[in-house]
Length: 52
Image (tube, rainbow, N blue to C red; front, side, top):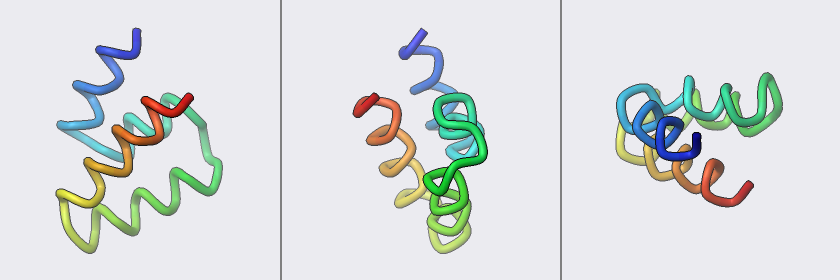
């Protein structure tokens, strides 16, 4: 299941984080990072998914 979440995180980083943590602070941080740059959003999303 984590592999599917990582693939989703690469395509749509906030969705990958949402599937992992819901509407927690990490989700909102990921939206901000994705708006500032797509690559920081991907890195954060993969980190959140790999950490849990």
